[in-house]
Image (cartoon, rainbow, N blue to C red):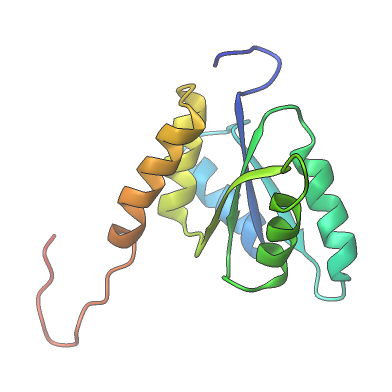
Length: 142
């Protein structure tokens, strides 16, 4: 890591509860405990403005924030968009459709001290490959 106190990039999994926590658990089951990821679950009864405040606090670490949101257009996404529009922007990169593959890729990038640009490129490359639709009755490439 570039700075022993904090990473240069912070990755926040922002999702409807309990998905963010579950993705972190899955990532840690594969890679071991990591400080590269933060989770921010949206409670069922949580007001969007309150969630935006909590996301802003999670992003206020002094590092560059990457938000992996579960659903395009959902409250976690909208909250991150609001923070991207601030001056200066609080969120530097926002990705919708977070899944375990993207979470792992972002975490590894942070652990290796990768730049925001490198992490963004890695996520762009991986995203279309991380979801596969297998037609019924056909063998897949394994």
